[in-house]
Amino acid sequence: MKNQNKKNAEKSRNKNDQKEKNMKNQNNNKNKKKKLKWTQKSISENEIYNLNEKQKKTQSQITSIETNQKSDIKKKPNEKTTKKLIKCEQKSKSFPSKLFKRFSFTFSNNKPNESESENREYIEFSSDESDYFAVELNGETKILNNEICESINSVLNFRYSQANWKLVYSTEIHGTSFITFYEKIQTTSCSLLFIQTKNNEILGTFLPLKLKINNSFYGDGQIFLFTFYPTFKMFKAKTTNDLYIFSNNESIMIGGGSQNWSRSGLWISKNFIHGASHFCETFENDQLASTTEFEIARVELWEIEK
Image 1: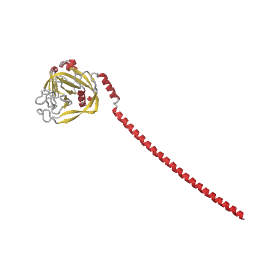
Image 2: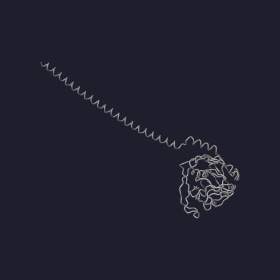
Image 3: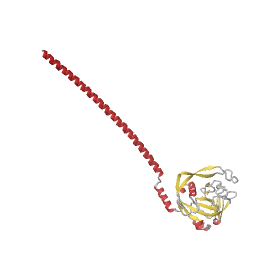
Image 4: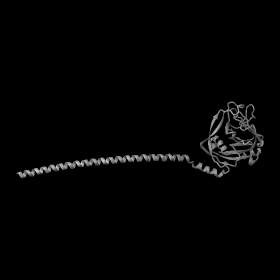
């Protein structure tokens, strides 16, 4: 009996030991699973964080690339402009620079000559490097330079400022005859007339229509006078009168006054020998040269090809 009881007691102890072992194993497995889950969770969060960081960097790189591309597109001229600039360099070797700046203008109430007008307004120009124009000159010039073309081109109507300039008449090439002059400009519908005095002053007029032999005034308000003495100024037509152009075999007159229409903004004698400039009501202009009357050195008429 005693032996039997001992055996039963040992069996029960073994069972209890086995149960304890099983319980410990189960607890260990649970802890392992928890650790594994925690490790997996930590890894996945880190990966997500890294991915987000990479995504942010990639997005910033894309944004910077797009910005650079946009700025490059702005800087690069289009194909037509490039072709035009190449064409300018090939065709106009006598006039090296083909890039011109647009000039900004401001109104000034200064009165250079108070004896003629007390409240005139005139326009002065200052350079602005934001805009550029390509002007192709078809012909050789003895008057024009970069500054002159830049200034004139900047005040022209947009459709004219994009056009080429073609030499139609030059006293250096065609002589000084009025007959030859009118023959050469018969088909010219829009032009710029430049005059250089013997004092080396440059002045002239913009003519949006054909000059012709006519014994009465004609033209419209698009005409303007300009001078480079001492700096570039242009004078637009006012609404005071319509005395724009008077041209015949004896003279060419731009602008006039109601009381004395012979006092014109610009007057040119027959065969381009003498010239004169006065204040006139049509343009309310300053005197275009250093003296009221002057001798003409040379004349050029450039057609603006539309």
